[in-house]
Picture 1 (tube, helix red, strand yellow):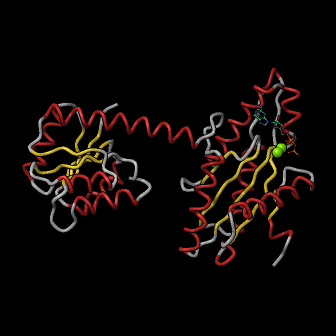
Picture 2: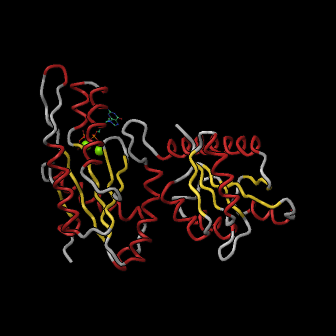
Picture 3: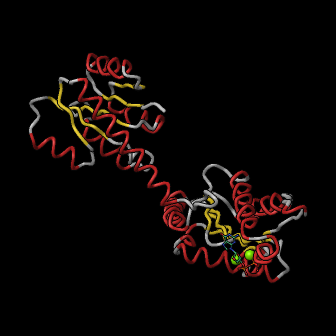
Length: 303
Ligand code: GH3
Ligand code: MG
Ligand code: MG
């Protein structure tokens, strides 16, 4: 796959020269001469590398760098500062300390510029892979527990700021142990994968699904009230019940139990552990009621 580079420089001839250089070398170039546009374009295109001029009117390169680093979506894109040949060491150091990976002085030498871009693109690929591996569960491809903790904390503070409710579902496959015992561990793995895929397909893009433990999953639903969280839980419960598996000739169905907890306003001021504990308490009730059920925390402790 090709490399995509965002070029930010207020001087038209610089932008044109760079765009042409990149184009001739099979690198896709997105360009802007306006500092304010840079962050927007970076978010939109997620380039592999950003070439960023330091001296620009209104919003300069340092400020753009700061904004890029502040934003989760653009934080990890390598930035190469474009600096004038007469730049002081102090300015260069400042750029690197702000999180730029490298700098290159104008006028550019084509070979050097391309080599640096290639190195940065490679570093980004490696870092992306490491990040992805450290956040995902290898079997299901869902987020793992480590990521869940991080995301959950972010979602709680986001909800506190926005005033919207936040819901948490805890889902557990029923009688999974006997499924393993009867049909084998590999079959159990296939079931986990399929259940994960089904949950993912039944949710919005900004919902978070994580594998919490063996056959336990957590779903975080932003901007979701109890009533809607229960509907989502019911939809997923039904989707999973409708799956059919065919281990060595037999046809079997599986079911899940779900615990629902939702908070808003000041109730959001609790830890992710508290949130999960409450969803788990509701789940435990659902198991006790015979499984293949949804129980809300608000049903156990009506307000
Ligand atoms: P319940 O309805 O009460 O939830 O019963 P259960 O059998 O589903 O629950 P239990 O917690 O007793 O068993 C969970 C089983 O999940 C036990 C464990 O061997 C199995 N398991 C955990 N992780 C994996 C995995 O990665 N692959 C497979 N195949 N099985 C797993
Ligand atoms: Mg289970
Ligand atoms: Mg379990």
